[in-house]
Each structure stands twice: as structure tokens, then as C-alpha cells.
Length: 58
Image (cartoon, rainbow, N blue to C red; front, side, top):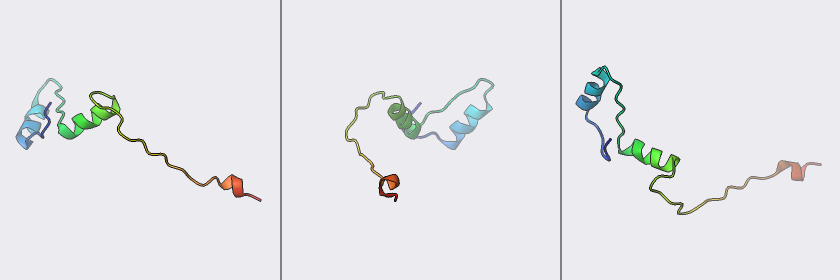
């Protein structure tokens, strides 16, 4: 795991190993932290509204 990124050589090396190795770079680490609420807190919520077309029917 790194907060940066992995070089092509590191990715190729990991692919060539018999054991399964998962490389997690900074972008993926951020996605996982947000998805599982680890080390993050809600800052702002946005409410999205849409028109209720049934309201205007007839």
C-alpha cells in the first residue's frame, strides 16, 4: 500500500508472483476510506430534488 502510485516495474513484479498480491495506491486507498468510512467524516451533504411528474398529471 502506498499513498502515491506504483511504478510499472512494481506492478509487473507483483503480477509475476505466485502468491496473490494486491497493490493499493493512493487513489484506491482514498476510495476505500470513503466507502468504508475509515478516517473520514461527513463535511457537507447535498440534497438532489427532481420534479414529481405525477403531481402534474391530469
